[in-house]
Amino acid sequence: MRLLIMIIGGCLPFQLWAAGEWEYELDPYYSNIAYYQSLDDSPIPELGERTEAQVYSNLFFSSYLPRFVLVEASVNPMPLLGVILKSDDASGIYEDMNITQELNLVEVVTAGFEEPYAVSLFLGNMVKYRSAGQSESESKGFMGYLASYGHLHIRRNELVDDRWGEFEWKIKGDRITQNRTLSWSFRVGAKIHDNPFVTDEYYVAIKRERVEAHGDIYSWVKNGGIEFKYRVSQKSGRAIGQQLIIDKKVPIKGYGWVLSLGLGFVRETTEKYSGPLSFGESNTAFVLRPSLSF
Image (cartoon, rainbow, N blue to C red; front, side, top):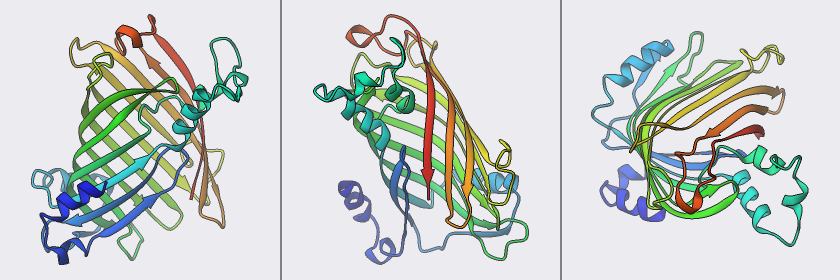
């Protein structure tokens, strides 16, 4: 992280670099800290009142020339905890979590995350805008190119040495009103691995979440989300995995917290791993993903 900041910071005037903004997110599954900065002396564009489709259009026709840079360091706490529990043979906790011979509770709550951490660099465009009825531009949209790197891979709660790189084009944003937050992302990309027994892949992924503080907490539309990912081998073009998770959101009024419970599956085919890492058969894992964001 420090190296990336030094490299990028060395390419920008200090006064400009110091004028950027920090953001962070704390989540049991994905926590991060990020710094974003303009590449020139212009402020973040404020579009005024816009619909979601108008924000997409504005970003799409301007993303070919990046004007913003974002540096992010992220960690996946729950998947890391799964690795620790499985590697601690003496405690026996991991074995005690076996529900059946083929089903382990630790795997159920950590499936779907293949990296313990990542450092990322985003180049693209960012806009602020207002939703209908809002007086301030609280909503944001991003579109551009993301490169990520790490040196470890998680395979069923076990660490594998693997220097990997991920490159993607993505659009991400949120739409904030007084009582509702809608967030969304769409990305297509490629991931390459230094470990020859982990398959290089192409993928497409979508994610959409909605939280209404005063909405029906039983409604999966007003307080819910969906995440889908489809992956294919770069070499053969055949599917190596799919992931589908549906979230139920429960806003905790008065605190600004959101409790969520994700249910779904993660499937891996025999194309995913080879050699000593191969399981010899396709595998579909049930996913139960409790989380609290604040």
